[in-house]
Image 1 (cartoon, rainbow, N blue to C red):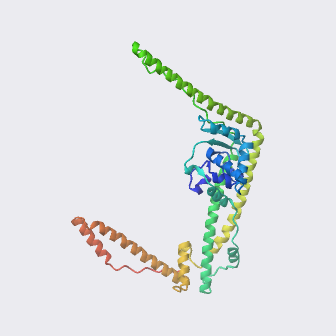
Image 2: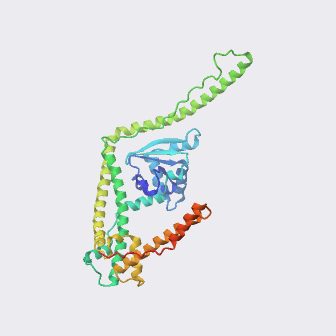
Image 3: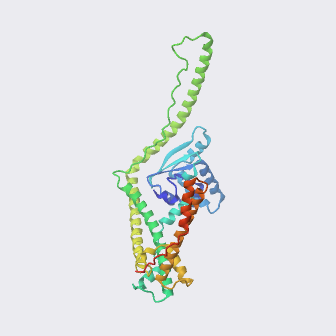
Length: 393
């Protein structure tokens, strides 16, 4: 949901850069009632950073403390590193945000990884916006009038319009983010009951391999040693698979124990979690009210602008501004006439290019293609009509 702003579908792996640059509270804010994965490689590298004594070591220490004390997973991670038959451990529960942690030896695809830069983008989106003071003052003093007093007045009005468009774009992006945040938090609090997710990594018990020799065929004496050898190999392989199964099932039992231990305190933990969601909702709705208030200020500037609303886009206003600053125009109407004329000629030029490209592909054709090419060349020689000027409302 939040990660559409990052051009990532659903990253659940934490990069080392996150573990050494951002506090757990900043990251877990985006994983309410969800899960996270940390690779063993990222965890071990974070431990080395924590021992370096650098500026990033403080943040790494906070993550390692959470893993050791809140999740009680540090001893299990030593086991994960030493045991060749274990690939992933979890879930470990962090009830404050109802987040499940998994630790794995798998190195994820980059599209599945949340980086420090991704977190920075999300935190910037979450930060409240402020009303632009220049635009606030201009909106306060701006009076609705049909014509500007001077060219400088017109240029300043266009500058304020451009600035308003930029601020509106930021506000719309911020509002989009806040609405997604509200959607996610409301989806949690509106559930009849927010429950813990049971452990999901149940290992598959290996089935004993059946004898490959058909039972309805008479066994010759020479085949008995081969059959016996094959049965011994199958039995040995099954014993090995059962050993791996028991190792993995033991870790699943540990996860079930963690789940059961948390269930005893879950009623109070659930209430705390829901209250945290409600606080997030209140904060987001307050930000939305402020954003809508700012939007009214910026839209009021555009509604009183000297330039018609049909040209209220960044590209058009920048062209108008250039016309005025270079002296090519001295009024709104002259700007519009020049703009429409240039746009008209650009359309003709683009049309000519398309026709020329068509002629190029038809040059080596038959009689019909040659006839079509002649007709297109004739059209190119026709004198284009002059554009019709648009009057400023």
